[in-house]
Length: 156
Image (tube, rainbow, N blue to C red):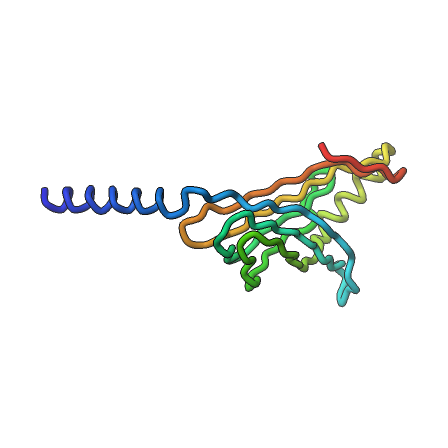
């Protein structure tokens, strides 16, 4: 019975500490700002992905890691992880660069699918999860849109 009381007391203190840790915390904004092909050393093409992260809080943002995927027409072409990023100071923004290689099998399925259809349009999706470490929740972002071979693009 004493163990239950101690557990309840500690749980209450922990919840109170978490609630008062940062009551004015605002979720940082993350946008995809670049995507370019890199010189390849093998058969799989490599890419550099640029993210802009805006920290609207007074405390520094200590980014522990990022997990991300890029899909075209539902085919997950690029999936990767990154870590060891510099802290983003309070009330500032910073660019983060990620590198990744393409999934060749998914790419071949996409090309086969493109040859079967003649619409000339792609649906893209970029998903990322940013791990802030500590007591802060992870940030999940998702950007989708269309790319047409005629050059027009647009978010969904």
